[in-house]
Image (cartoon, rainbow, N blue to C red; front, side, top):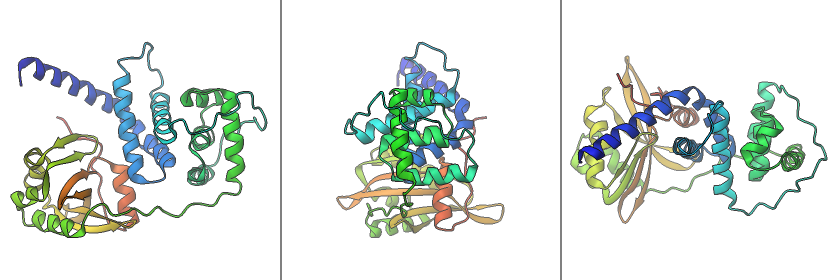
Length: 313
C-alpha cells in the first residue's frame, strides 16, 4: 500500500470512528425502529448497518448542519427501507386526503406504544412507516412527511388506513427461517473451531467465500478470512471460546461460549450460508448487542454483549 493509500485509509477510518462514537447513544432506539419496520432481527440489523453507512456517506453531500442526528438517522432508515421494500409498487396516496387527520394522542403509555409497534408489522410498508414514526416514536406530522419524502396529506391518509387496520389486526407469529447451511458443515466447523484447527476451519470455507464482522470488518476470500477474523477469534480471544450449533426460529446457527468472571456466557452469534459443498458466507454478530440479546433471549441462553466496537485506547 503506497503512502497516499495509507493516508486515505487512516483519514476515512478516523472519520467513521468519530461518526459512530457520536451517534452511539442513538443506536438502541434506531435498532428498535428498524426492528419494527422489518419484522425480524436479521433484517433489522442489516437495515441499521445500511442506515449508518448511508448516513455517514451522505454527510459529505448535505449543505446544512445536521442539528438533529436522531431525525437524520430515522429519515435515512425510513427512506432506505421503503425504497428497498416497495420499489415503486405502493400506490400513490391522495395528497389532499384529510379524513381522520387528527393526531394520535401525543403521549402514549410505553406498553401501548410497544403493542402498536408489534402490530404494525401487519401493515404495508408505507402505512407501517407512518404509524411507527407518528404513533410510536412521536414525530410530528410534518417531520413524518419529511422523513418519508411525501406530503402531510399523504401521511394523514397512510395513518388513517393504518390505524383502521390495526383495530382488527392480529399479531403475526414469529417468522421461520429457511436453513441456508448444511448442518454437517456447521458441525464440522464447530468441531474444527473447538479443536483449534485453523487450517481445517479455513478449509471449510470456499475459495471465494466472504465474511462479515457486522458493523466492523468485511473480508473476501479464504486466505483473508483465515488470516483475519478466524485467526483472531480462534487464537487471540480470551475466555476459551467454544462453538456450539443451536437453532433459532428454524435456522441452524453457531453460538460462541466464553468464560467471563467464572461464568460461561454467549458473546457471539454466527450465521452461515453454504454452497458447492463449502461455506460461502459467514457473519459474526459480536458487535450487535440488540441482535445478540434478542437471539439469546429467544433460545434461553445466558449472554454478555460487547458493545458496538473495539475499545480504542
